[in-house]
Each structure stands twice: as C-alpha cells, then as structure tokens.
Amino acid sequence: MSVTARQVKNKRTAEGGSTGRVGTVYDVFLRYKTADGYKAYGKRGFLTKKEALDHEAEMRMKLSNPGFEPIKAVEAKQTLKEYLDEWVEIHGKANLRPSTYASYKSHIKNHIVPYIGNVPLKKVTPAMIDNMLQQLSAKGLSTSTCRYAQRILGVAFEAARKYRYIETNPARDILTKFGKDAKTPDPYTVEQMQHLMALGAGNEWEMIFVLSGLYGLRRNEVLGLRWDNVDLKNKRFSVCEQLPFRIPPGTTMIHEMAPTKSQDRVLPITEVTLPFFFKQQQLQARQKELAQLSGQPYYDNNLVISRADGSPMRAERVTNSFAQFLRHQNMPHIRFHDLRHSAATNMHELTGDFYSVGEILGHTLKGIGLSLGISTNIADVTARYVDVRLDRKKTVLETYHNAMFPHEAEKIAAQRMKEKDRDER
Image (cartoon, rainbow, N blue to C red):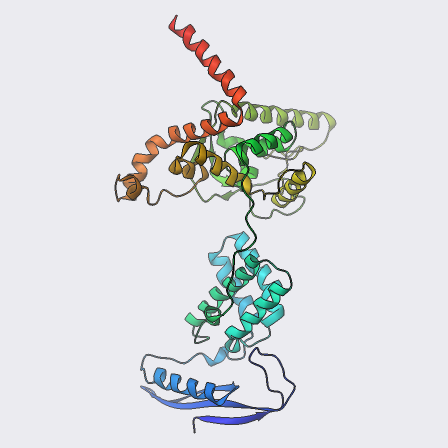
C-alpha cells in the first residue's frame, strides 16, 4: 500500500500550529524505476487521506517521466527561517541594491519569521501565508507592507522551487486580495512650491528644495551632488553619482560615491536658479573660512549640500527633518520623494513635453522611436534625440522655473532686451 495511516500524539493544524491532541496522519511511500535501478520516494504527515491519495497520484505521474527528479531530501528538515536567512544572503548580495537588500532582511526578520519562520520549508502552505498576512493586517500594518512581505516570499519560494527544494510555490496560491492602500499624497502645485521655497529661503533647506523640487533629483542624488560635476560657466550640471546608502552616524568624509540609475544625465542651470548655486557656493566658502579662523575642523567633501563643517548630511536625517519642517510650517504632508513628483507633475502640466520631463528625471528613452515615429532602432533614436534634448530640457526647466519666480524671470527678460538693443546700436 502506497498510503499508510499513522497515529501521532500531537496532530498539527493546516496552518502548522499544534492541536495538542492525538490524531491520524497519512504517509506516502513509492518505489519507482530509473535508468540506475529502483529508487524510493516518500512524504509524510498529510492531514487527510484524500490529500495523501492526491499526492500519490500526482507523484506517480511525475515519477513516470524519466527526466523528473524528486525534491532533494537534504532540505527536508530545513525551516523557512533557515532557508530565508541563507537565500537572502546569497540572492540579496548578488542581485539587489543595498537599500533593497536591507529592506528584505528587515521584512523577513520582523514580518515573516515571527509567524511562520519555524515551519519546515516543505510544509509551508498557502493557508499559512494567508493567516500570516491577516495577522500583519490586524496588527495595523499597511497594505503595502503586507504586499511586500508576500512579494518577498514569492521570490524566495520560486528560487526554492527552481532549486527543487519544494514542488510548488505556495505564495502564488494565496487567497488574500490586496486592495488599494492609503492614497499617495498629491504633489505640490506651483503655488505650493512657491510657498515652500519662501519658507526655505535663507536656511539649510533652500538649495535642497531647488535641487529636489525644481529639478526633480532623488534624495541621495541631492546629497551626493559635488561641485566637480557643476559647471557654472556653461550653466549645467551632471547627475552621475549619489550618496551611498546608509552612511554610518558620525561620518565626516565620503571617499567614494555610489552610481546613479542614469549615468549620462546632464541638466541645464536656468537663469532663475543660477543665483542659488552662486549663493550656496559663497555660503560654504564662508563656513570654511570661519571654521579655519576658529580652529575647528572642516571636512571638504566638495558637496553642494553639506553640513556647516563640510561633512555629508545623512539621508535619514533629511527625511525626518523634512516631515517635521512641513508640520511646523502647517504645510500639507508629502514625503521628501514627492518633491521629485511635484517637479515632474508641474513640468509636464506646463509644457506637455513628456519625453523631456523623463530625460530631466533620468528615465529611459525606451519606446521613444515607436512613439515619435523616428525609428525602431533604439540606438538610432538615442543618437538623434540626444542632439536636441539639452535644449529641450532647458526649455522645459525654464518654463517651470519662470512660473515659480515670475518677477525674476521678468527682470532677466528685460535685461536681455536691453543687451539686445545695445548690441543692435
């Protein structure tokens, strides 16, 4: 008989919990023929006879295929925690960005292991995952957090399936449906950005708001921009590096920056924002001079955004301080990253130039050929589009920046007219 009944003192539930009662479970044992002779396959602990018979029928069909190999027995007793700890180290360090790797480890530790970490890898069921997600939700965690935990399990179990540690991916068969999470904050309008710039005038936020809210730089791109990549003479700067992920507290010198997602991103400095760059340069020169006069150390990292002693700002501190700044100023709540969304939305609404806005933000050119009818060859599209994109980016940025600072824009336009009249005479 391939299916046998067995009495156990402590029968478990479908979710893997203990009932504390005596019960009957069913084991499956099969012998199958291979090119090397007969081999044995077994799986124990089915809660019902029907489950055992269904598994027996499934395995008879699979084992009749000469190319099929049963799951490795060496992984039979490995718990989910043991597997995830090993998987995230091997998979994470090789395939994930440092921030994503840290996020995976945190979610595994806090939102997965406490609930199903002690269950053997091969015995994790969709019902257990559904129960875990329900507990996370009942705990008050957001839908996005629950969905992220399920996503991590889905990727991890898929790797286990490919390694033949398990037969199927239980995370794909869950019944939990994720609805929409809390609404993402609306980006700031031009008027709200003007008010924010006014609140940041003359303090440490001013240049940060220029780079994030007017140019759409990401947080670590803002904090990692160095003067070496700013060309004030030709009025442009390159976004080619960013602050490394999670610099330790007390760091004073950054010897190596992290690469950005878009390596060839060059942005024009408009006439309206040029004074902000000069003002920031003069402020830092004064801070350096005063530090030297007082005998205090100055850590010259050549950063556009830095602390008063030249050391880098920590990204987490900027995010937290930004939330407090908005709260104290009675401004509508947005995340720091929403400053980038605000820049993108305002530029697009003012110009309708979707492609140039994407270039300013560092998005890909993929698909531009088909959309513009230029070519189906992306290399050709890039070559032809790059020739005009700096001018187009300048036009889009000037439109947005002039709307932000209309009085300064009028002064600049009037000055240009005077210079033009003088040249014509």
